[in-house]
Image (cartoon, rainbow, N blue to C red):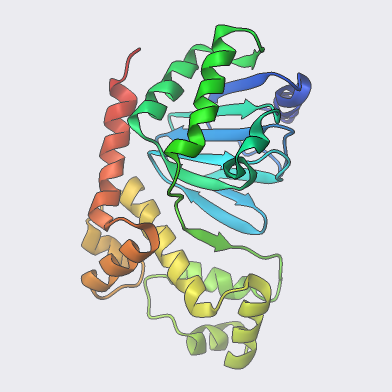
Length: 276
């Protein structure tokens, strides 16, 4: 998709303020940082996506959907080729009835929502009020607060602080190694005290909290996008104890690594098996 086509699509989403806009596509293009007048639901069949918004990155794994409130500037980054991305944009009328619609969230997709999302592939573009399609999608929207009580709690802060960027890059490039504040400070020209202070000032979390978030996020990515064993993944993201990795993963995601890895199979089987 060329630049003009991307701009036309972004404009089309908000062209008719009262419509629900549906867009299914191959996710092969990266859009600029942008925002919509409508709330956005995104579900990915195959692959994983990262959302960048509010100086944070959000990991969207398989069998989960993403909600972006109206007016929130964002862009999505897809690290792997995916089958289909399903986007539904809802007019702001009615979105203020529940606080659910006011915050970014990533939530599991249950079987009911999955079937409704699959059924929406019958349509593309503006769906106008008064049509059966609009009523169907409005029902989908209205059930979201009731079926989405447990958001995925993994959010990695980002920053434009140029001083900190080499340290963040070093962490990502050496994730499997024994990373300490002392080692990263020496490698990037900081004192330990200064690096610790810059982490807190720029990211609002400590170095150790950031390192844990990055390791678990990378593990989630590998669990869904590779054929590595759980033990291999644990070592690749810097854990030398499988039990420590499993316990940390559970505390941060609410699932054991084996349960999370099963989402890959569940997503593939449901994506391929549902016909309506």
